Amino acid sequence: MITVIKHTATTEQLDHFVRWIEDRGFKTNVSQGDNETIVGIIGDTTRIDPFLLESMDIVERVQRVTEPYKLANRKFHPEDTVVDCGHGVLVGGGNFQVIAGPCSVEGENLFTIARAVKKAGATMLRGGAFKPRTSPYTSQGMGEKGLDLLMEASGELDMPVVTEVMDPRDVEMFVRKGIDVLQIGARNAQNFSLLREVGRSGRPVLLKRGMSETIDELLMSAEYVMSEGNPNVMLCERGIRTFETRTRNTFDVNAVPVLHHLTHLPVVADPSHSTGYTRYVRPAAYAATAAGADALEIEVHNSPQDAWSDGAQALTPDQFSEAMRRIALIREAVCAPIEEA
Image 1: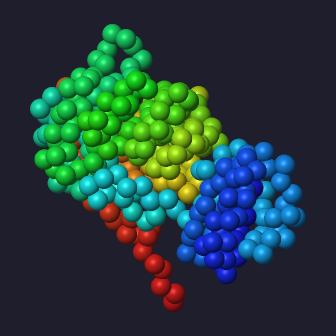
Image 2 (image 1 turned 30 degrees about the vertical axis):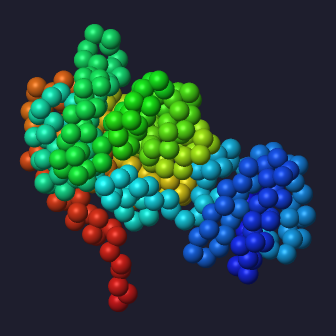
């Protein structure tokens, strides 16, 4: 249930109203936008008489919310959330970023790749130190040493680092080492213990959509993170599993505008995992940009044929540089105001 507060309400009146709600066993989420203030009431709201609320002096109107996700719901928070990823990099609310780097951190070549993607315009560095692989016999990543290399590259280039955490027991280590954004991969999208742990960390979270996850299920996964007091969640469309076999996954570009309609959280698109082939990554990135994605996450490797993982979908630095120029043109066309004739 949401209550829209009258613009004439004082801070003291708002505080008193929130205490009155919480004293009855409910949680509240206060969203103060430019034009109105909304108090979201979370819990079994069938126990609240909406007519009683509407009779209060400071309440403009009351609206029941049927969706099970409350904190992630745009009805509770009409203004776009802007996530501060560190190093002055913001995502959401009109702030567009590109996250780029290798699938796996492999060693010193990370610095070569990181310098190249930053030169091309990337603003955040990605790289997997711990890798969830389908086969237990393939490379599982460098582990803690990979995190150290990522942080060294971050320090040199002044770029936030995005890397995947797989185990709730490792979250504290990621935070201690200074990782800026904790990524939850598709295989862990409904690992609720991990979601709660990264929620408690307070660090920005890049939450990838599960391979067979619906949009509502993705939002409920975000709700797990946010329910622990962490509002800094970015949702990532990375392709879903369908009957199609010509690409690694099926890129649900529809999800970008749908998520913007349903939630205030930033929406990121991953054209690399969505398609699985280098030849398709750039067109998918352009489509996501045109659809209104707040950020892109793209895999880049200086020698894809030698990559430890996902070389088949990695762009070379030159290909990435070209893609960045076209992405900028698309952003200009989509975001520029249209002058009336």
